[in-house]
Image 1: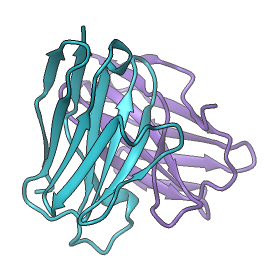
Image 2 (image 1 turned 180 degrees about the horizontal axis):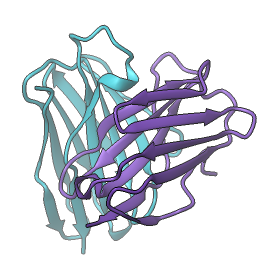
Image 3 (image 1 turned 30 degrees about the vertical axis):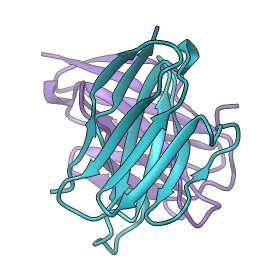
Length: 120
Length: 113
C-alpha cells in the first residue's frame, strides 16, 4: 500500500510552453500533498503544500503564477509549469500524506518517483 | 542557506562492515529527524526517525544517533548489505504545524560485495 505515482516520468518541451505534472495517490486518500524540486546534487526543496479544496501554500521565493497547483480531489494534485524556460529544467517530485494514519505526519508522507523536466 | 547538510556525496563500504552516514543541521527549531532511502527511478522511502528528546533509535540493522549540542545526526547500518546501496537523505522537521520536511542533498551509499 501507500503508492504514489507521477506522470509523466520525463518530459521535454520548448521554451514558452506549459507543462502539467500529475501526482496521484493510488491506494489512499491524501488531503495534503507536497511538491518538491531537486537540482542535480542538491537537496529536495519544498515548493508548495497542496491542500484538497483550497489554495496551495507556496514557499518563499516560489512564484505562484509560474507554478500552478491544483488539488481538486483527494487522490490527485497537479503542478503546471507555465511558460517554461530552460531554468525551470529540474526534477520535480511530489509526496502525499496518508489521511488514514494516526502516526507522525512526517512519517506518513509517501513520495512519487519524480518527473524530470527539460526545457529547450 | 542549507539548513540540513550532508557533506559526503558518496560512501563505499565492504559488505558486512558498518556504514556511517552523517548529517548536520543549523536550525535549532528542528525537533524531529528522519532518514530516507532512494533507489533509482523511485521516490524516497522512509527508513528511520528520531525525536529530539532521544539520542538513539534502533530498528534492526539501522540505528540513528542524535547529538543535539553538535546539531549532528548519523545513520549506522550494520552489517551493510549490497541491497543497501542507494541514496540516503537526511530530513528534519519542526517549528510549524504542517510538519514540513527540510532535506539534505543526499549521500550515495555503495556496498561492495
